[in-house]
Image (cartoon, rainbow, N blue to C red; front, side, top):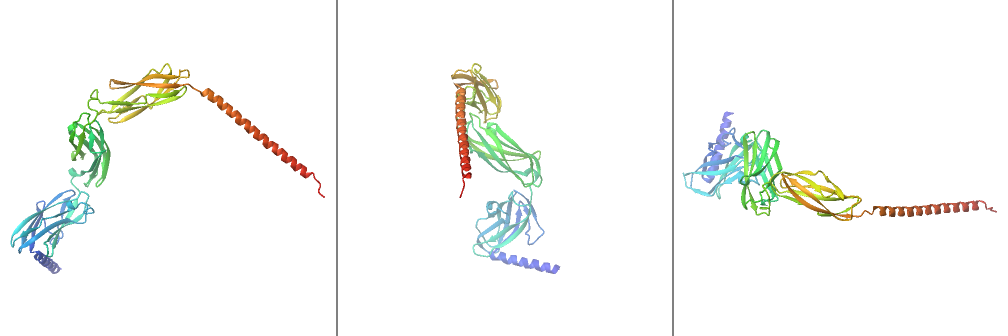
Length: 420
């Protein structure tokens, strides 16, 4: 049995030697990230552990057995599902080079183990060839494992909405996709989107992120300050996990001039109130005034609405409440239901809505055009219509009864005739 193995090794050695001689170039050693590593043919049990996402620097020592020209060396990780999409990561090739007989040269190739690659064995294939001669290949066994805990979470992708160009004073949202490329489930993953130069940020949490799991977070809301200077700003996206570990990516956001700088009365932000100023109100009925409050400040604010000037001619109620909390950059609507008293004079009647927040207030003048209630006339007309309908029904019933009696009399006359 040992003799058979020895023969096989000799045959493979001779085969490799003959193949090497085909291009007159020998691959005498290979190092991966500084560690010398033997090929799988000469040592089938030899396997090198690499991590997902790890950069591989492959240093090759080659020696020419004769003058060679236009030679290239290529390295590939085969079997990865997305290799055709990520060829720049899993494949590299040297430039063509010439080498004189008995001269040794060193070549370097760079690969990257994909973050999405399966955690199992893969072959690193190294091929040597020139323009015309037969190429040869050596293989090296790589065992892919999950990354260490400190590198387990990566920022897989991110995007800004509506775009990566935002006007000062406006808000934008961010979507972030993270992935756990480690071997263990992680708890309490915190993701933060921040513009350090403007001191604005927002954070979201994941209770759990399993090994190999991807998760998308899309509720980040950041508002650019009103007077932010136009320019390109760095956006830092950071994932914190495993108590003390973190990973981050840096993006760019372009800020352009806005129309809110200098409008704010104080540092708490600007409030915009939108409401129809005039509505028709019939006596005994309600008119609706949708009161829209927009908080253009950088923090949430609580608003309280009070009404005045209604007592002489009408009343009002507010739904869902007279108090509302509006987040930064958002809008809340309070519905004012205004009704006119039965004895209210027809015509224009004024009242006022006061919106208060943080010791400041804003008055909005509103009017209601009171229209006389014609419900009594409408009831009379309705009664007249009902009486007309009733008369018509009685006439129809009388006709039906009359025709029925006439038919019955005809039937009796026919029954009394004598036939011969």
